[in-house]
Image 1 (cartoon, rainbow, N blue to C red):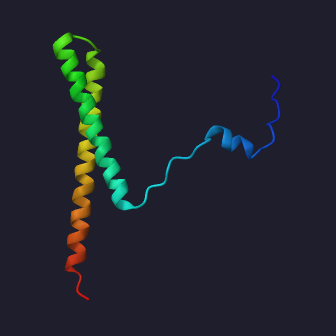
Image 2: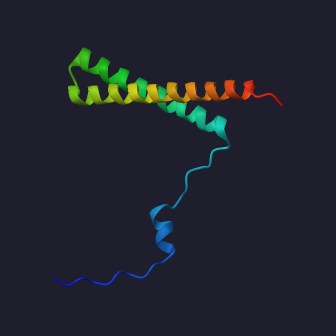
Image 3: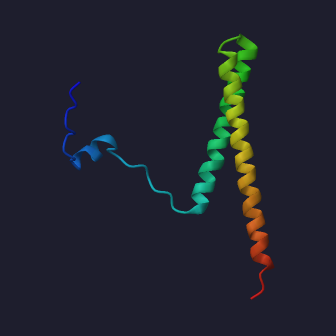
Length: 97
């Protein structure tokens, strides 16, 4: 078995893989807003799949269950992040200066 040498590194390869970088978020509020929108979208997709499967029998039950679990886990994660933020805010309010 013959192993060929690695090709030399070229910075042009990096631009070929990712030609347009994603727009940077402005701050924490934008990140939080985007996360909430993503969770809402997952919930809507799961609801749509459930309705389609119940009404028309279309779609795979396995895919419907995966979409529901994904939406549920995303919501639980968002709630836990909110709980941590509230706890941190309360902790900062308890600090005396």
